[in-house]
Length: 383
Image (cartoon, rainbow, N blue to C red; front, side, top):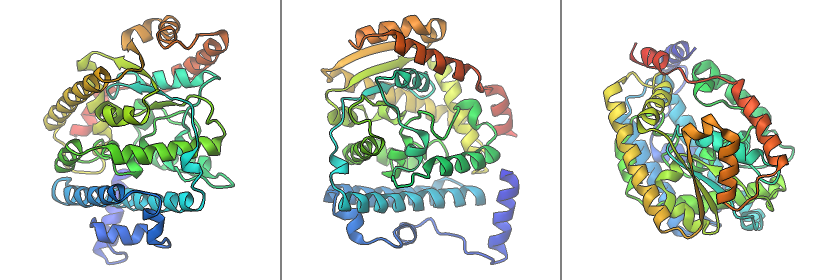
């Protein structure tokens, strides 16, 4: 389907039936902010946050144009994601301008799952969030952080996942999705133009270098406002939210500055296994958006990224005074009950029967899903 879509889009542009959208910041800004006023972006946010977003958009567009080597489908998907980021920014700004109390909703101290991508963080998040005393972020709410009544986001997320699965048949093999299933808050960070979702789709080294050297504070101030709004809308602000995103490993200092009272669970997995699984996932996303299939470069980049994230997690946690627990991927796989009971004890949370029963149901659901097939993905990527 991806190949057919790529050919069709190319044909449409070649025949002049539709304009090829430009990956230029001003062009994207006009398209994404249509129907909104300038105050919708700027009234609730600091000048620093406004400048940060505009600069991120400028640098990301330049990297996409100069480095990504996108095909027609990849170009279309990049344009759509950036336009939607601008639109969500204005929609959230309008919501907070009209109802400023939403972005200031008091919330319980969260539980943060910190670890490398593909190190078991999703499993940990879903197990802990299954506990009736805790809350998790629904995929549909991460995908679209702008609440509305009636809430049609589960239906929209179902449609988006249907199309994504048609384009990328490996999607659920590497990360099982569900419209209302607990999932990472990657959509909230992407709405603020964090590189977290973009680096897993496109070759954008200059934007990554820019982001890695830049203060992540503005991203997480936006993130916290979205979390508070989501908690108010879902009515679970009193429950500890179990937060998880691979980008947290890189931005631990900025994240923990916003949540100094958080509990932290750090996951560990063998580095070679993490690298193999990470490259599989990224390859599956890049394969249909670009004709640039350089496996050696991909492996080198993610080995570098893993080293950076380990270093930054160590630094962030060394300065963190809160409660922490370490979880080994192999131990979680061998004895999840014992591992979770020990983790709860370290976090001083109390592992009770209700939590165990809820986690058992989550385990059963996870076992019935798809599993990684790295060799097949690599063969397809290099074809």
